[in-house]
Length: 443
Ligand code: NAD
Image (cartoon, rainbow, N blue to C red):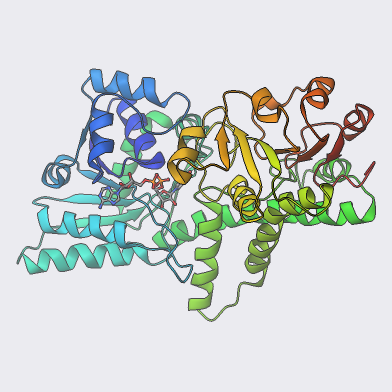
C-alpha cells in the first residue's frame, strides 16, 4: 500500500519505518528542514533502540523516503497518517493546531479518495474537526472528493517503540466505514496473526480509549506513590506492600513501581487534556485531578529529601545526578523529574554534575552551557567529590553498585534514590545515608 505519514517524531518515524519494513511504500513528511535533511542521510534524530538500522535498511530498499514537500506527501498515500504533536495548550487542553494544519494541507491538495488517520493523541471529537477542516478546504476549491477520517491511536512506549509497534497488544481503529475497516486490515495485516488484536470501534470510542489508557497508567503510578508517601510516614516499606498487592491477579505487578513521579511527553499532557475535556462537559474529573496533584508533589520530593539530608542549605553544594531521561532507553527529557530537581537546585544556588547514558546531548540542548551544570562521561565522575547523589532514572547500568566505591567518592555519603534501585539495609551497612521512595524501614 502507498502510505503517507505526517510527522517524523517518535510516533511518525516508528510508524513510517515499521510499515515500510513489512513492504508498504511509505513517504514521511515533516516541516522541520534540518530533521528531514538528517533523516534522508539515514541519521535518526532520536534515540530509539532498533530504529536507525530499520530506517537505513528501508531507505536503501527504497520503500521509505522523507520529504518536506506537502504536495508530494498528499498525492502519495491512499492512507494519510497524521502523527504530529498535540502539546498542552495554555488551558491544559490539547493544542490541535499541528493536526488541523495537516488536515488543511490535505483538503487543499487532494485529488482522489484518501483515508486520513489520526494517530496523534487527540481529544474526543477531533476526527469530526479534521473532517470539517478537509471538507471546508475542498468546498473552497469547489471540489467534492470523497474521503474518510478514522482514529488509530498509538500505544507505543518510547524506549521499546519498535517492539511495541511490531508486537502490539492491540491495534485500535475507530471508524464506522466498512471501506476504511478493510483498508486498515490490509495495512496492519502483516502485524496481525491474531484477529482479536485488531479492535474496531466507533471513532469517539477510539479517541477516548487512548486517553483512558494513559490516564489509567498514570493513576497506577500516582496511587503507588501515594502509598509510598504513607509508608514513609508510617514506618512501612512500600516495596513489600507492592509485592503484597501485586500478587493479587486483580491488581497485578505492572506499573506499580514507586518513584519520583511520571514524566515524558504523554502522561502529563494527556491527563491534563482529559481533565480539560471533562471540564468542557461540566464534569469535574476529581480522580484525574488528584492523579496530577500527587504526581506534581512527588516530583518535588527529590529536592525536599535532599535539602533535609543536607541540613536545609543547598547553596554552594555540588549534587551528582545519575539519569536525566524521564525513563530508561530514551533521550526524552520532556517533563522529566530530573528537570524539576535540577531547576530547584539551581534556584537554591547548588551545582549539578550529571551523567546519563544517552540524554546528555538533549540536556545540553535544553539548558545550554551554564556554570552550574556539568555533564560528565560516566557515573564515577559525577559522584567524585559531590555532596550527595540523586538517582533520577533507573538505567540498567545503575542497578549494580559497589557501595564502598561510592562511599569513597562522595564528599558526604548522602544518596537520594528516586527509583528504589538498592537494598536499604546494605546501603546503610556501608555507611551511606540512603533515602529511597516509601521505604520507611529501616529509615
Ligand atoms: P514529536 O513532537 O516527537 O514529533 C512531532 C513531529 O511533527 C515534529 O517532528 C514536528 O516537526 C512535526 N510537525 C509539526 N507540524 C507538522 C506539519 N504541519 N506537518 C508535518 N509535520 C509536522 O511528537 P511525538 O512524540 O511523535 O507524538 C506525536 C503524537 O503521538 C502526539 O499526539 C502524542 O501525544 C502521540 N503519542 C506519542 C507517544 C510517544 O511515546 N511519544 C506515544 C503514543 C502517542
